[in-house]
Length: 467
Image (cartoon, rainbow, N blue to C red):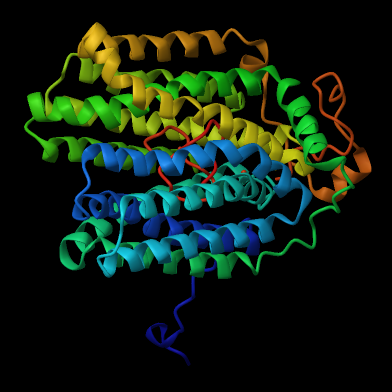
């Protein structure tokens, strides 16, 4: 007779909804999130160690962002034309090479400003091709009633990797120097690319021949503008992301130095935001709102609170609490946005629509960072921040006036076989959903609002959760 103590301990199994692709994509996203979050800090320290100024560091950061924005639309068209996992692997390989060369120059003490800017730009090109492809893969990696839970768990892992990666990167920079952190990021891209090479695309429908890149972009544009809920929220976040970028990258550190006690309290507030995103993701593993977009857009209102708190400014403890609340709320939005994209956008056009989403959501960020200083000089720091908070509130209220945002509901998930037998849902043509639509089969932003779902960890975001 076998005693209770001698019985084998059961090995936990992954949930039924966490299939091969979802598991591989989640693991790769965590790996790149850890590597890149530390590398973002390391690249700035590398500039300073090479004798660069704050302006030089800003130029290197801009050198990455501008090619990212410039090539996003082409990246989306390419990702819908070729197998997405191959585009992702190629982009990871490009990022691995660029970060490896960056690390080598820094470690050997030969890094010059133009070299660092050029390699950062190369990384931005890789991200521009990676992000739309990754979003398409993540959004189609799960099906059934647990899509919301799956997306929440994916984002939970991604947010945790960003927080842990930043902490680990900071410690390693202090211990071994920024060059080795960049080398670690290159290795992370190599490992993540290897995992993504094993993605199973046998169930992905064959792509029909298109009319070239320009023709593909036109098709994606028609899908984008045919849905008022989609383009209105992207327009909203083109301003929201810009306001948050200016507040947290320009005004926040200045206010922390003047009123909060320095970098320590400011770092704690940013950590609270990260903790809030993890709390929001945990909440969304259980919460299944029927009206997805209405719930999500209502949760954008609290994202004006940190900007308003800096305008007051509140004390460090109150600011930390506000940042936590905003992190929770924006993560609820992020998951509902992924659910809406997954349900409403045809599978073969997901990457192109995602590229327009990313483009619209990111285009204003470099401009906002450049104008933050002049706006402070003209209007004053407090007035500039109050104006930004008011823009977030007004635009969010405006988006709620769009009927589709209020009415879009989560539909019961169906299997691929059921979808093929039944065809598109009634009324789909009226909503602009083209033939070949694959409905709900049961899915880029930190801070900035919507972290990329591909888990690239580049610190940017879009109205589409990709990364």
